[in-house]
Image (cartoon, rainbow, N blue to C red; front, side):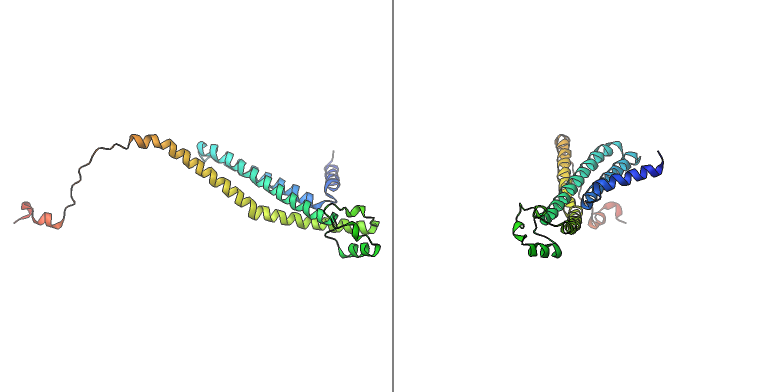
Length: 211
């Protein structure tokens, strides 16, 4: 198979799944980006000879856990924003002015506006449906973008830092519990006799310094 046919097949596949759903494409490409970035981080730790094996045994699971938090939070938040944005349109709560005016003239506004409403079943014309599809896709992109910004810049860092802080507290507690036995053994120390610090008066009273 030639390179051109492979590329055309890839374009056809992308157009089939994402041609009318740009928000979905943004979510999936964002998740793929997170996966590749996390894989690169783990690979960098694995191939770094300057990091001891003991540290790698801790750092690699930590990076994988962070990656899971990043990916899950990103997907959950962006998908939620995307779904809410599209539902605002399909329920009729958020419409372009041209479609809303057309529905008002046709007396169809009473069929929409509720959470369970479906504007596509309200008797729209073909041209009105086309305008509505374009509008819904734009709202979907806006919602997905807002969700990704919220996830990447606010929610994900907070969740990841909280998990890392709890992990650090657990590790410190384990380290301290492991050193308690040694510290208890060394608690009994021999009594030391301290000699008073010499002063100038000490030397002036010394017989060896008299002429």
